[in-house]
Image (cartoon, rainbow over all chains, first blue to last red; front, side, top):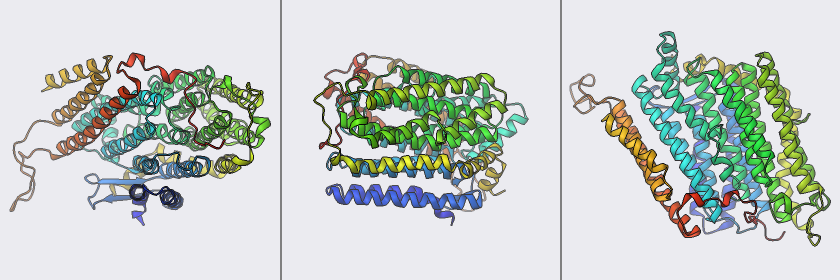
Amino acid sequence: MNSLLFFPLLVPLLTAALGILTRHNVNTQRKVSTLGMALYLIVAIILMQQVLELDYITVQSGGWQAPYGITLVADILAAIMILFVGLISFSVILYTLMSCKHNYFSPAFHPLVHFLLMGVSGAFLTGDIFNLYVFFEVMLMASFALLTLEGRAEQTEGAIKYVVLNLFSSAIFLGGLGLLYAKVGTLNMADISLISQQAIADNNIGPIRLAGLLFLITFSIKAGMFPFFFWLPASYHTPSVPVSALFAGLLTKVGVYSLIRLHTLIMPGEILGHELLLIMGVATMLIGVLGAASQMHIRRILSFHIISQIGYIVIGVAIKTPLALASAIYFIGHNIIAKGNLFLVGGIASNAVGSENLVKIGGMWKAWPQLGIIYLISAFSLAGIPPLSGFVAKFSMVWATVESQLWWVMVAVIVTGLFTLYSMVKIWNEVFWKDHPDSNWKFNKSKNLQRLFPVSLMALLIVLLGLGAGPLFDVCLRAGEQLIDPTAYIQAVLRT
Amino acid sequence: MSLVIGVCYASAVFLLLQKRLLQIILGIALLGHATNLLIFVAAGLHGNSLPIISDGMQSLPETAVDPLPQALILTAIVIGLALFGFSLALAYRCVAVLGHDDIDQIIHTDSLDVPNLMDNSNS
């Protein structure tokens, strides 16, 4: 049963390989891709179920026992991440099938998406920090190619910023790895955790802290945190809409996930200051939302919002109580779905009205009210209006700050929520409510009805996430408790 | 060796701060090499025999080198090569599309009227 852990890696890899083989036949490739994605989703659900039963699943690849071999390990957090990643990827694939022109995509699109998925799942499942680096690179390579798929001017420009900063962060990560290995002599995260705990007890944390800070910089760059977020709004709005949605759902979340692991497992305790992370989180949140408020371009507003939402999650990680971690995890799940859906809806809308520049468009509500409703559900969820999923996420986060008596953080969280609402309403006003500036603009709804299917599915999911928040949040709480005390994780990996 | 690494890092950062695309990419490549050297040196330059347990021996000889950093570096070199190749291709594409390689002029992504990607022709 433990070999279940290989499937989230094998399924995308094989699908990508088959996708390359069938590149000459668009229809076959699409079928293969959809099938592979459905299979991945099924694997994710089974994994979730198993992990809820067993708490931890570990497998030692190649039969080499930890800490010498490479361990794959799934706890509840990893299983949740895999599940949500599966959901958003599946919706994005559905979107490309139903909402895009038949031959719009280059034949490389589907295989690259699956390679990306493989890198992301590998990063979630691995228990070895060098392996994490390798999966980061798999993910980056696929994302570089997806970003520049059409090779247009602004894409190559966005890609240069994205590539240079991400390669720089990879080099820092690798340097940190080298220094950490020199100090602790192991790469297994559970083993490193034991040694760092020992180092805290011996009051000798200097060298480990150095490596930890290098990791912190790396993961902050990947997550798009203040002060390293500049690459994100410069590049996320340049690729095609499905790719944007996929990036929004997956890439920054991998950075945040690694940050959670770093802060709770690899460097537990006070090796990295909580205050540092807290200040970075609050700054990320405020600057992201203020950046969004000043934009007049649909996907650029949404890109800045990614940054702002990352801030929320980081605050949860920094406070580091079970409740704060649970709300951070719930927030990740909610954010993957809501943000991805907003990108897709924005894509459909801008396609119908002909531009993403908010000044030049409008009139969608009269032309297509169904799309407006779907947009409202996703946007209000992001802004945190009850009973949608964002409300639960934000409410629990506020509650966590109250519990820890961090009043200034609480104020920042609420202010950010208001500004989020402001920019969501701005998109609503400009795209849907006001009349289209060009009075000759016409829109034929009947041709486009099927394009609504994937986004309405996601909107339904958002509503369900909000209504079913009780049991879901219990699962997140369990995940949070697992993270607070890494002893069981270490035991599961090292079998001591 | 530490001095070499330091010089490598310094030159890499200097190159990264230049205006032209090719220099930046060379800077990234140099940064990768500096990091590989860092792993190599940080893990310790001791030992002078192969890390192989030959016939009749129970454990590794005391003088054996640690094989793991070399494995890490090898992996990093392979990944670095692929990324370097991609960056060069990207730079080529950039020059072909934009007609220059001056990153001070890479400002199109900030304009609002980036042509909309029509992923559906029948709308």
